[in-house]
Length: 346
Image (cartoon, rainbow, N blue to C red; front, side):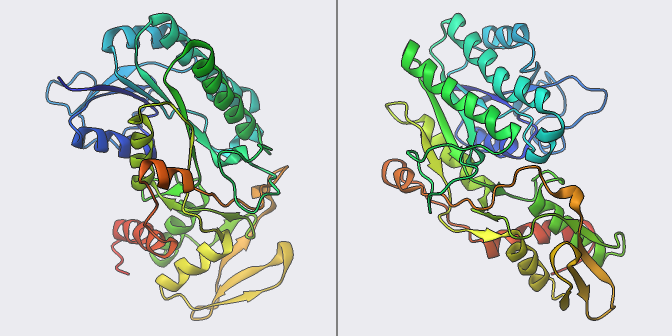
């Protein structure tokens, strides 16, 4: 009999890749989607044509982390073996503008789902998508499962709540409930308002003559960037262990936003000149003389996270998992996808 899995956030980057992975592993996959006036299913269109479609590879259920009754109903209907909670208000910058909503969905939404699972008495395993934003203003040269948290955004704070609650339900009720603390992971399916995808998409649009300039914020922020399909495989591996434990998934390499930007321009053979400094810095295309990258204070956050670098030694040792895609390969994968949409070849 097939295992049954529920994925919240199935329409997102990670949810879509995880759905594909579980289908390959012969799971029956169920996704939770919010009711909206317009569909947001571009990442999973190839897996199902509509809710309840008889030939669908996945089954979709209307529900919301803000609505406990819908979660209880879905658990009762599906009776899953595994639950992957990937849904959240997941944008750090937006969380400063919408802190209450971020807390309600990202933090309390996890409470509603865990409590629904507990009261249902189903023996399902539970995975919580934690984040490297938990570490925030860290002073550790590398961050692992023992590194103290110091979140620097409403999103990070909400994720900290969800992390500790997941651990609390594991310890209090004996539930198989685990956290995957994932460092940044990107792909062509990344949301367009996340900085890596914003860079690759904007540069493709600039080359196609559809955009004048790319505006960015803090170019010096350093992150540990990996490839999303590899990270969702790590999620699955965490859930297959005999004992529930929390794991960091990361590449162990860091690069700045500036590094990623300049790497992308190198892949695209854009010759540039840096002008000015600080908030007035720009990148000029030496061929056209046009400014193609500039800074905008709109994209600076009230509290910045300057540096994150993950130590995934435990995952390598106990799961046999490690990131393989380099940042150079990642940038090329993302650029090729965005340029292909514009009819441009690298």
